[in-house]
Length: 143
Image 1 (cartoon, one colour):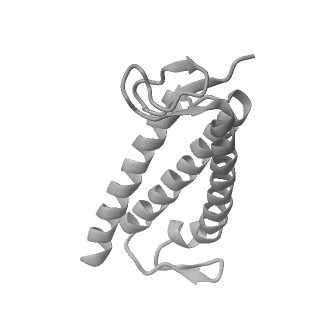
Image 2 (tube, rainbow, N blue to C red):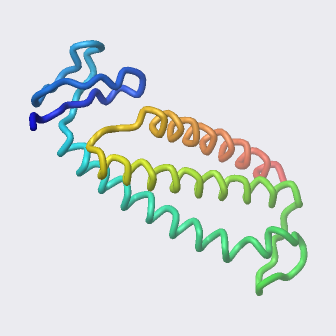
């Protein structure tokens, strides 16, 4: 079976037979199925690490964030309820990003191809995380 190369552009996604380095349709870089499987393994490891770390942090901090001003699980969140809600929203967005990275890594490992839908979803979640972190920094900085 001939080697297939896939375009790395989140919009194009063209494929070509052989080890092609530049996409014939859009000019972006192309990678072989083997290269995408290696990248999928790295993406899977990063996604699982993010899920594990943020899952643990969320698990530990949620009781105190759900009851601001009160002691819960040995901790007290001294901020306002809307600030606690913003923090939990950011945690959820990070967990969603980790989950999408994990699914994307599994997909790349299994198929040797990229999913444009998962790439675009990852980019959208990354933008949401950056915007929410910026908004939270402004909200917490003005407290």
